[in-house]
Length: 143
Image (cartoon, rainbow, N blue to C red; front, side):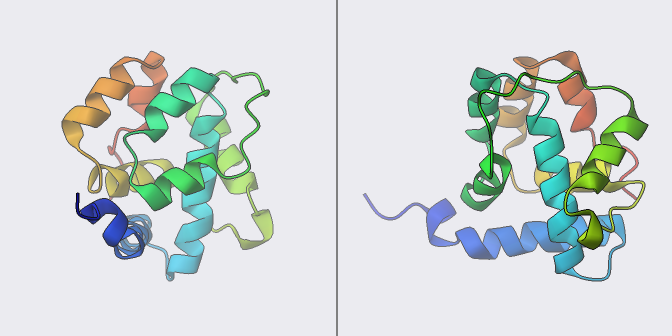
């Protein structure tokens, strides 16, 4: 078997994802987008059980998957989703001295992610997660 495309071009695909997230959020740099993306991924991950984290990670491209799992503590209890304001505050709390996540951070990252994952796979995995997961990954409000 040849080297799969998703691994052969993992860095390029991640760079494209960061550029999309940057542009949808209206940020100036991909460095700013990095902190926003990490915040969104980690905020979502904290709302899932261990099995749900694994299921969701399996639909992510390799580098996004790696960032999603970065510093994960599988012993941590899953948190409630809470309000949009609470979720955004948590996104902004990740690396706060370098975090410039705008009001539309979550939908901006959702839109960028939807550009990089199979829609059928994403819909399938989201249907196996709490209903709030589908709302979280909605790209509404990304512009």
